[in-house]
Length: 194
Ligand SMILES: CCCCCCC/C=C/C(=O)SCCNC(=O)CCNC(=O)[C@H](O)C(C)(C)COP(=O)(O)OP(=O)(O)OC[C@H]1O[C@@H](n2cnc3c(N)ncnc32)[C@H](O)[C@@H]1OP(=O)(O)O
Image 1 (cartoon, rainbow, N blue to C red):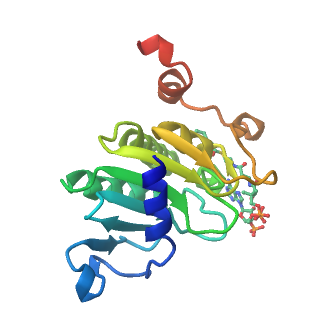
Image 2 (cartoon, rainbow, N blue to C red):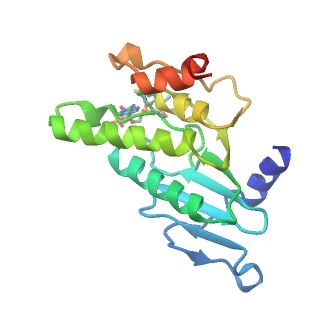
C-alpha cells in the first residue's frame, strides 16, 4: 500500500486536464495515459506500475451530481477493461474537499424520473467501486461527508490527510436522507452477508 501511495505521489498532481487518451512525452509513450470524459473525473494510468490515479475534479466541492456519477462509472469501466490496471487510487483534485457528497439539488424539486435516474447513477457508482476487481484505495485529502464517506468505505483501503480540520462521516439523516438499504446492509452491516 505504501508503494501505491508513493506511486500516487509520483504520478502526483502533474496531470494535464482536458485530454482524452493523450500520451505523455515520447519517453513515457505507452507507459502512461490519461483520460476523462468531461473533465469532472480525471484519470491517469501508469501502465508500468498498473496503478491508476483517479481525481474528482468538480469545483468548488466535488459534488456528486448525475453528470459526475455517470462519468465516474464510465471511468471505472474503462479501467476494469484495461488488463494492465491492477490498482486504483481515488482522490480529489481540490485542496480541502474530497467530496461534499451527493448534490442535494439533484433531489430537490426534480421530477420523479430525474430522481430515479439520479439514484440509479448513485447505485451504479457504488457497485462499480465496491464490486471492483482492482485494489482500491481512497486517499481522502479533505472533507468527506455523506456519500464521500461511503465512497471511501467502498474502497479496500482508506488513508486520510492528517488535518484536524477535515471531517468524515455519515450526516445524511440530518438532511432527511436515508442511506439506501442495499448500501446499509452491504457496507455497514456486512455480517449479514458472511
Ligand atoms: C457511495 C454510495 C452513496 C450513497 C449515498 C447515501 C446517502 C448520502 C447522502 C449525501 O451525500 S447528502 C450530502 C452530504 N453532504 C453534506 O452535507 C455537505 C455539506 N457541505 C459542507 O459541509 C461544506 O460545503 C464543505 C464540504 C465542508 C466545504 O465547505 P466550503 O466552505 O469549502 O464550501 P461551501 O461554501 O460550504 O460550499 C460551496 C457551495 O457548494 C454548495 N454545497 C455544498 N455541499 C453541497 C451538497 N451536498 N449539495 C449541494 N450543494 C452543496 C454550497 O451550498 C455552496 O453553494 P453556494 O452558496 O456557493 O451557491
